[in-house]
Length: 179
Image (cartoon, rainbow, N blue to C red; front, side, top):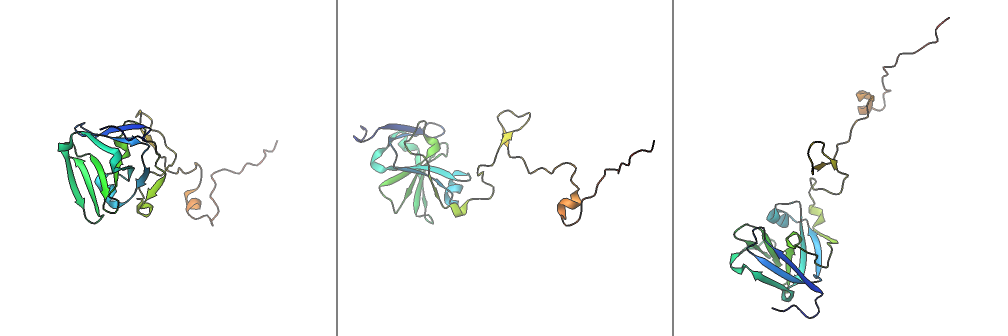
């Protein structure tokens, strides 16, 4: 199938095992982060990032026989996935029959849209990473972590917990020596 005349190019994607390959005409319609419980569970992640495309600009290039579907009735949506490797492929909402939503991570190139929107942000989990400063973990190349708030050395713990009481000091009072 030829690309749509108004398209600026094609973005290709595939599932983890490579059995299902697809493409969309770029630019995509929009992109967003979905924090809803249904997308979180379908992806097994803190949130899912999707790229929305008009259905007529989306094509399965190979592996159509490997696509299975799940009717997500509470969300009024259909989720398609690769039956060989389990990769989530397509998310379709009943209320938007002309759109398909594809996980952004499945594309190997730019889609023409950056995810600027957050859907169901009120469902953001407290354990999700939200941009805190990360530092390298010593002895583990490629691993970063968020340092916990360190206590300052020399601060009396009782004072830190109860600031109304004065801190204890371990410094001996020095008086000038008599000569």
